[in-house]
Image (cartoon, rainbow, N blue to C red; front, side, top):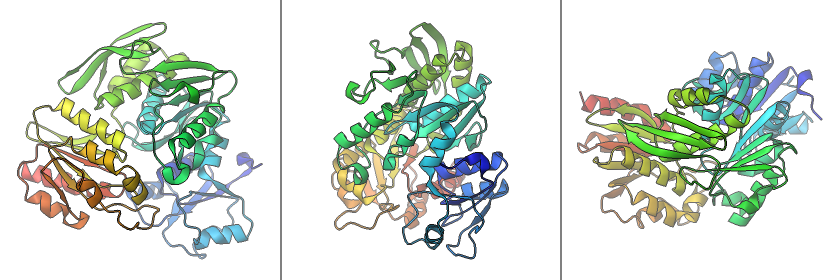
Length: 455
């Protein structure tokens, strides 16, 4: 068993990944020598380098750390990777990111947040509530929390960790409090079917410590839960659950509501973080906070001051003429949520959606659902599929989604030609860019273009 206290040098294979970089920041903060490899520079790797972490972008035996006492890798590293294979052949101490996250989080009061959607927002709101309440919290987030401009918050008493079901990673965590936002069909390349996904979530629930608590969304089936520990349910407005909202309304681009909980009501809560799905995430976060004794006042203040997460309903432009929203949504349920939120907040404006599908397998498996979600926009611009870890599949392109979309105003555009298309458009009212691939590399260009057009 690896004792992290005795390790001084750590090398990360895939250090630019959102989960990997949070761990790298944690160990750097612990005073350890941290370095790593990634394929290409990104805004995140540039930030890590500014923080004193050495990164190589060359898969070479000349650039790795031959004195590393621990090598942490992501499953996205290909099996023919030179550095990875050198570490294996030379019998280095090599662990997956999920194993190390478990080793770190399990030494603290472990708050693990799982679910097919909503993990990052819920984790970030939870961490912000605890931080606002002056709790000594470490947070390992799957996105950049705008309040902290980081995916990591430093602390050593409470750990807020995203519990990722991909590759069954979350089975390395032993939570004191587990929250489940949703259990949906996804990652079929790993699981094969929904029953296998549900079984994995059930195993995660069984990892909860004997005196622990499970807080689950009302949509999560009871068969998934672990009835030997304390269970609570939360929802947006279902009065049969333990935590829910009343008097929810939209006023001047903000939501106001009351939070009903087993011991009372938190009145007149305000949130500027878009979408009812994010209000529901805030209810889950509030339930966690109440279970560890955070005051109602701290919860209310934190929800009002929470600025959101980069690429989670992030709204870099909001004025009378135009609204631009960018979101990481890459599953039909997530698309439903962000499109509904945009239409609810700006009901009189035309919605143009630019969507980059993520993974050939997900596009093939969920093609009908994607088409149904995207048909709720007034205009759709589809980019080519972002392959991520996959090879192309015969007959699977963005066209199979486009063919099933029912709105007339639809097209496929190459990522390279996207800015030309937008430059020639003069009817943009709400623009929504969505996808988990590299569509985010266009966001700043789009901001610049829209600001230029609206001068």
